[in-house]
Image 1 (tube, one colour):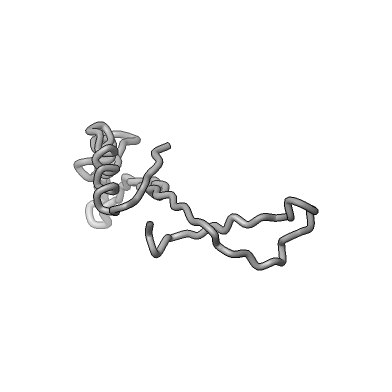
Image 2 (cartoon, rainbow, N blue to C red; image 1 turned 120 degrees about the vertical axis):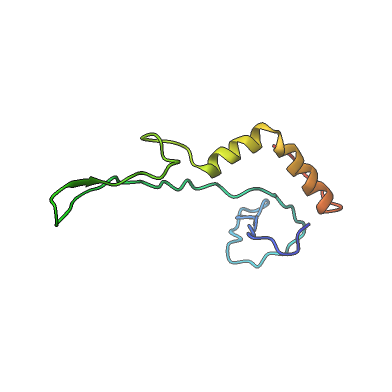
Length: 112
């Protein structure tokens, strides 16, 4: 088990099982621990490219900017999300679990 978890959730009893008295202000004692290992949620980053035009102040010709070469449609996936899809399609998840179970000896994992 990790000695430095990123988050700790205390699972305290709220009330006495016998008499029902509140245990809110009573100090608890840790008697057992369990850890869940997960990947943090992915937050999408959306980049909007805005094509602009400008009039030359010298000759009055209209000029149009250019999109980067890799931006070819109104809405498309970027390099990182395409890479992630490729990785998932190649069953990397099972490799990741194998890595975790071998990198963190004496651990037990429950895959949900």
